[in-house]
Every structure is written in C-alpha cells, then in structure tokens.
Image (cartoon, rainbow, N blue to C red; front, side, top):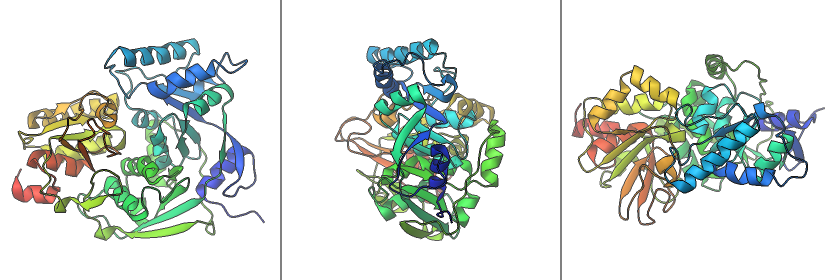
Length: 428
C-alpha cells in the first residue's frame, strides 16, 4: 500500500519518477521552469560557462529571465548586469525574456503570462520564488550555482521537506486579506518555525481567498523559513489558469491521511489589519495599536502586493484624500499589465491626484536599490516582504510591513493606522 503523501510530496515524487517519497529522501527532480533576475542570472551565466560541454541550455522554453531588481538600471554596474542577461537570452534563444517596459517584477509577470501552473516544479534565483505555490506548484528559491546547473540539465537535486499544515477558519474582518493572514501566521510560528518545511495553506477561509491573496501568502512563506508554501488547487485556481491561458497542468491533492509535522488552526475572525514592526516579519502588531508611529514614506506594490487587486485596495482608501505633507507615497504596480489596468480603471489618476508617485514596475525600494531608499531616522510603511535592519536603506531607518489598505491609510494620516481609524480621523 502506497504511503499517504502531502501535496508537495506528490509533486516531487511525480517529477522524480517515484511512486512515493517521504521527508528526508534525497531525489533529483525534473524542472518545468527555471527563473533568474539580473542579479542571480549574472552569477549563473558565469558558472554555466564553466560547465564542461555546456554550450547550449537544456531547453530555452523552460527558462525565464526577468530584469526587475535595479531596473530601469540605476547605474553603470546594474546596467552591465542587465546587458549580460540580455545578451545571454539572445545567444541561447530564450524567448521568455521580459525586457523593461514589456514585463515587470518576476513574481507578478510569470503567473499573469501563464508560465506557472498547478503541479509544476519551479526554481528561481530569488528567495520569493515561493510565490508560485499560490497556484499549487512546488516553487522554491535557490542559489545561482543551482540555476547554472538547471540551465544545463533541466534538473535539480533536493531533500524532500516535511510538511506543516495551517488551517484558516472563521471569516475575514473588513480590510483583512492575505497579507494580514501571513503576517499573523509568521508571528504564530516564528521566522524559523517552518525552516526547510513545506507550508500547506488550507481551510474554509483559504477557499474564499482570491489568487492575489494566495500569491501574497506563498510569497512570504519564506519569511517563516519554509522551503515552499503551497495552496490546494480549486475552482478559483482553475479559473485563474483559464484567464491567463494556462492549459496543460496536473492537479495533485494531499491524501486525507497525509502526515504533517504539525497542524496549526487559526481563527481568522480575531485578526485585525496587521503590521510587522522592525526588525523581523514575526513582530506582529495590530495597526490600530501603532498610531504613535509617524512615517516618512509609504510603499505600495512590488512582488508581494503589486497585483491589480492590491492597487484597487490602495485606491479605495486614497480616493478623494491627500497624502500627508510629511509623507512620500510610492505606488509600484507589479507589471506593465497591472500598470495598464490601473490606467484603464482610473486608479492611476486617483494615485496621482492623492499626491503619490506612480512608478514603473521595479523591485527598487524593497531591496534598498533605488526609487525609495531611506535615510537615517526615516520610517517607511511598506507592502513589501522584509523589514530587516537596513533593508530599505540606512541601518538606522525602519520598515513596517502591512497590506495595501493599511499602507494607504497610513500615508494619508502621516502615522500608522488602519482604514477604520482613518475614517474617523480623515473622512473621505
């Protein structure tokens, strides 16, 4: 009788040619997609050229290269990295190269172009490659040498992770969405609570969560140390796949008696809009309890919350209001498609009239790269995924993590607050 398996175990077994797998097994898996950005690709390309006999990539259709971290290029050094990747894409006839102005941020671009799907195996030269678990794929970030090897052979070895199950029950309160759920979850288990484990997100609340929220939660599963985060495939997933033109995929479901190292149940009815205070994503607080924290900057968007649903949430709060005079508000759609949708729906006008900067898609400020770097003593509330010391600039600056609703409300108030507190303080 076959061993009962989790979603992650089933996907890995299928790609390893095994009938079954168990946590701790070391296997080589075939890969459906290998992704790199201009930073990880630069090292990967250099290492690829050192592999004896590797003159051509294994399959150019299974590689995606996305300039996103320091783009549009901020200086000569980053321009050189982008040129290296661009030339490699041409040399190897890699068609899935997303040039600036025709792509955006990797973890938004790939799903919306139907390049990731349920049951697939995806690795990327970026820790937040875990994002694609939102669509029911096994997706994880790896180092550039692993990317180089995958360029050459289309495979990767790994140790099968144990699985941790999180069940979300109850109902979502107003203004509470995927970002709030994952911040609460990370606080519950800790930034090392899922180290090298697969987090399986389940429960009645998850069934009602839109794909944007699922991608956000999977994106930040790495902030609990997870190897990957994964969501069950349901009607919402399949509708999304149909909308983006993803046709061929295999659905894997966890066996009812699959073994988990731990099962956590969370009552979502008790969760308010959340904020993670410096300097770890596990430092969760209620937004309503942080009104004494003034801010200098608000960043809304990027790979964690840069989808059109996130833009709509921010616009809902900003419409008819003005950004506080002491605050810089930077809105960053996750892709050119999202940017265009913002224009079509009138969201771009709302942002600009409110006094926001509407940026080209870029990782930019999230990594302290450009277009929003902080000086000493400045505080930023951000919909990004990390608030480590010095993450967005000076080591004496501070980053507070939140969802679009809270970030937009705080930008208007000039201090951290939720939409409900803002309504009483600054009516629309």
